[in-house]
Image 1 (tube, helix red, strand yellow):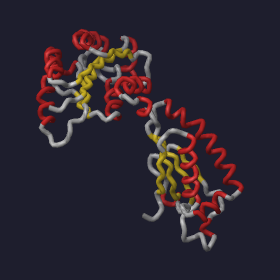
Image 2 (tube, one colour):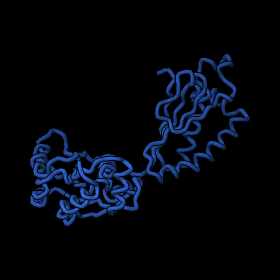
Image 3 (tube, one colour):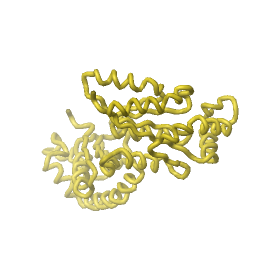
Image 4 (tube, helix red, strand yellow):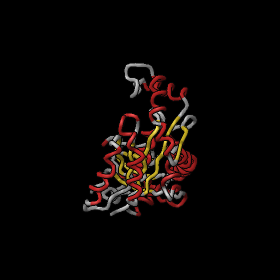
Length: 289
């Protein structure tokens, strides 16, 4: 039998279970929301007979389980006895915070769909009291934002948590005539630079080729522009990482996406790779494939 790491995420509605389960998904866990807890041993047995290795799992169990919650302790004992590593994370927050969060989202409380939220919170605390008692980790999210909670989950369940928070930087070149690249976070227009398109021997080439890159990078305005870009990115990238941003896409655009933007993107990507520990990827959207 394959042994599996299983994280059970439970707790009060509005305390951050969705954020926690997304953080675990980013760490490579297969996440299942609201699977009846009594089905967990059978589910693991089915996975054990699958052709591929069983991935680590994260389950959300909450008050919607109703009577199944009473079976949780016995089920968890069975799973642990089979050799699986199971940990329970219980999320909670004070009543005022939960009421405020429900007021902001205008959602109904699952245990009080036709009543008031405060009544639903009280009922849910009582319903989940036994699960809270079984929890390996209790996280009070009263004073945590979504980024704080993500970091808390990463610190608990990623053995290499610092790397898990590592920002991935994508540097993209593009041509404005084909539109802005989808998903770009920072966009810089380099059409102020002299265009190699108007140099006969450079026109058929691209910004990846050394002579085109030399032409673009040798311009007086290029050096000053790159210095300012590097200063800006040196300031911004650690801030994006601190906010647990997973990906940052930096786009440089020229008219056709063949020369100037390509050379600049290549140069900036190489500089970032030397200065920062982040993985840096380069993509030239409009170059011929």
